[in-house]
Image 1 (cartoon, rainbow, N blue to C red):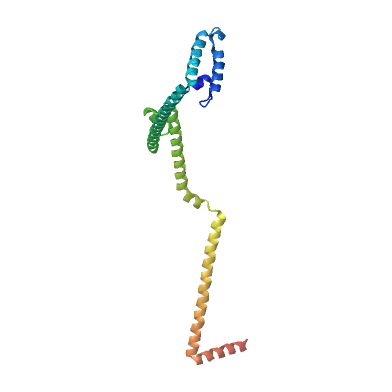
Image 2: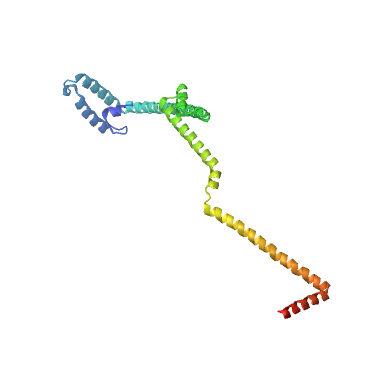
Length: 228
């Protein structure tokens, strides 16, 4: 928004002498006699410079102009602010609508992918819903890749227990069998020890109940020893 000060090339706080010097310089530059071949433009510009100087060189007119200009600037700033706010609101609404449309297209593609359709089908469905081609391609690629990743993860999870069993080494299997045999042997030895201990207790009980029989057995063993 050009002002009278801009026309003369001075700031709003310029002194009277600065305004006068600026006017003389601008008048010489745009005088029709000094702009051969562009007299019409020079004449119009020269007249604007004269009008600007006539107002700014008069203290009373300059004061009125500054007040009016300040009010105009306030109105212009308020209008510009309202325009910027309205523009921002429109852009925000457009972004929200675009994001909602994108989410809807992704949801649609996911539904068809869950039904087992491939990437080309997803792309065609999105195009049929008036989705822009490049966006439809991106969504179809992403959804198809996601579904493939999910299927691979599910397959790996299902195959994991069988893989653990089949992956057992022959050495580990042999070690398990040997351990089982050792455990069985140890149990048999424990049973034999327990049987001998019970037999000794049984003999001791008999000897205690029949001392004569016990002495007779000892004499029999002694006599057998003498024969040999």
